Length: 187
Image (cartoon, rainbow, N blue to C red):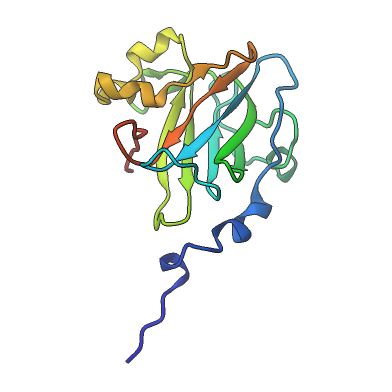
């Protein structure tokens, strides 16, 4: 008997073709409180991953998650709130803009530092990866309940750095393997 692979077992080489239409165009920050984030998705050899997709989930500046982002928000070229999906280019670069999120309450009542939740999809990953990006120079990072669980020497993989090109711009790379691997969470 011959077995046939299912769609979830054959992620490439058509990964990008099937998902690219779902992604938002790169956006520049267009309003007060908006921040632009760019970076690269890299493999364990520091090589770019040209067909990755990132889903970005974030709270609004008050720390509230929109219950149902509209189709207009998801494709907005400005500063959409709640959800953004972006693809990497041939050099592994991605870019998006969003309003800087506010602190969000953790289930036990403690406050989480402003952050974004990032799901990483790419050829060769049978399941998406889940991580977070935190903002640099944020005092609340020191008491974030989830960041506290990450060994101190690994926390830098979750914190973006200021982009020397602009004041409302951040750089954050997602590294899938190796010594500088981004911390990924399971839940």
